[in-house]
Length: 373
Image 1 (cartoon, rainbow, N blue to C red):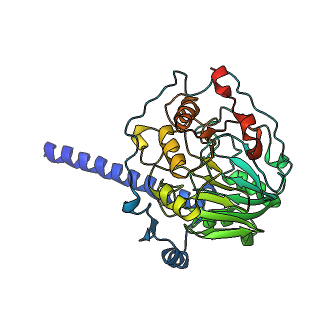
Image 2: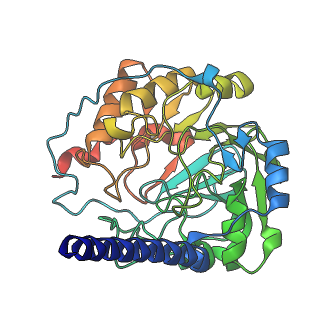
Image 3: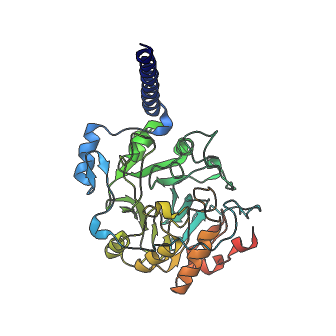
């Protein structure tokens, strides 16, 4: 009898544990759908549209590039930096020149990590803007910035288009998107991310979604959604339900590619086949690890991609703001500079918030990080 009662108590305890776990799961799912920061959800009509337009969309999820695009890249993470993940010094942060570039020039103001203002063809293009303190669904926890941009959303000029590569928190920030609405003409995003944006802003007509290889003509500036190999999702229950991409910007004078977060692969060959030589390549070249190598290139792989694209110049991004890996804060610019110089590819390394002119790119070769610990 004692044994029966003891076993009965154990069963009751286990039952309560299961009930509590299920309650937590249900609460979490409800919370993730109710809290706006986690974004919107595609409808059944949206999913039918995605399936008709996206080559890798099955059963409500986006899958990465076809298997025939797979390539074997670098298999070892050969780190060179002995510095910490966060700089000990205050890094140099410039005041940008936000006047529009000449028609035959491209200017880029790197705001840290993957946030950049590209001024091209008389248009202001903002890519993956994040002005919040933390890369997180909440601002009281999560990876915090170790550098702050010298400008705020209010300081920015009128933005013709905001481009988003994917919906991770270090690339898509709800508070920044909402703050930008009054000065933004268009939000151009991969399939599914439009559901996030339209949940956060008032004017749905500003939002355009694109599948890979689809383009948006912005008064003669071609903006093309091109492949990347990464992951997407803002909540536990919406992984891979949004598309991720890189962006090609092209006019009669220049052609540039912002790679987004991506693993190395033959999608770069496909992009080159369709577009030809590039004038500037802005690659994902930080926050890498052998533990998630499939989703982020090592710096040497970014150099291989640059070679594939026949690009004249490389400007590394995805560093200088957030710590999302364990490598030294300057490991990525040091390694990609060395790898590209070996291949005879120009490496442009402006300081944070410094406005770089592509026509005068030789003025931005200072390896400034070497002077800071």
